[in-house]
Length: 246
Length: 213
Image 1 (cartoon, rainbow over the protein chains, first blue to last red):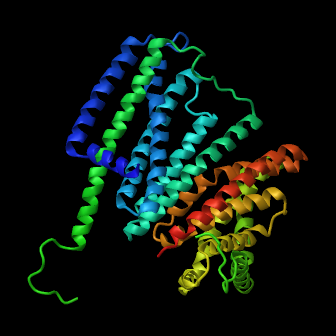
Image 2 (cartoon, rainbow over the protein chains, first blue to last red; image 1 turned 90 degrees about the horizontal axis):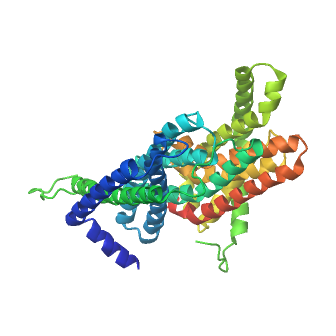
Image 3 (cartoon, rainbow over the protein chains, first blue to last red; image 1 turned 180 degrees about the vertical axis):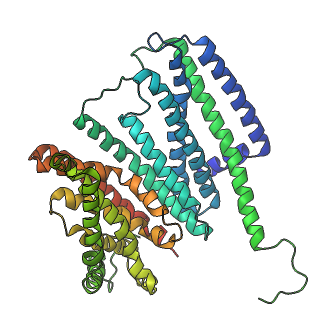
């Protein structure tokens, strides 16, 4: 199972796989653009601004997907001690932070005209903000670089602890809101969502997932190169002709 | 990594008790909690008082929150301290090399931590449970704080978001308990307990990985 996953990953991260993923992501993004801007009708209540949903929801979904991958990569690293798992966790965290920030900014842009405010202490908003902070902390640990294997271990622990914490944070925020004051926020998504709207949303999710996979392959290649550069800096490829006294 | 007591080797709890006794001796002799953390927490509370003005009503409304902010900041200070004593003279290495479960070390640091920040405030259940939660997270990543001393901000940046549930539940439970709404406070105590159980278990599981070198 793990071996098969690693083989599949190896294929996807080859240069060819990278190119194919990149073109697929570009095509999917174009298709979702057409679907969400042209094909889907404007929302009956919110009008054109509701189209933000087609990028906001996929961004939020990808944030959670990325951090789940960080979790898996972290466990994988602690179990196997293979640097590859650490690279996967690190790459996914970086991309996840980007998508989380994107989801929050898009949500604020959407919230202003619809709810009348950039920010509200809605449970989902608050959890997402805490999520962003947790993984910014993770990335700051990644930047401690005095000892690669220790850094990888620490990051793996933070990647596990952070992910386990998210449901507890969410629960506490939900209770906090419900006991403090009733939810004043309009729930988005009327019971029935129109067919083409759903299609545009799903296309957006698919396109963003492909973008994630593409970014992962790029980041993993950069990570491999970084590791190789660090290795070669430690042990020069060209053996010195004369034995160097240390 | 878990506690399987072999013959001739003290069990996890005995090991933990021994480390606790050692930590207590250090505290009694050094008085870090009494000498540094208590005045620090008091200073914070006074500063909050100045920041919010002398109005009684405002202070009464914000008191649980301010109290917990003081606890949180003291916890950040304390967890760095928790390992400082150990690393100063290489005692941490000695402790880890000893044939003792790393899990027992973790549980003990948690216990020390409770004692060092728990003393000044009313000993309500919310407080005890909240401090255990803070101590679990703080002890786990105190190692990181100690080794990353050149990057001071890394540790609070990592820990403060993680303990969001403790802050929320602690403040709400204190507030409700003070108002005599015990049954509502119990819900929050349950959340604090859940947080403690989750983080103590994770701590015991992963602490060894943090301490490998």
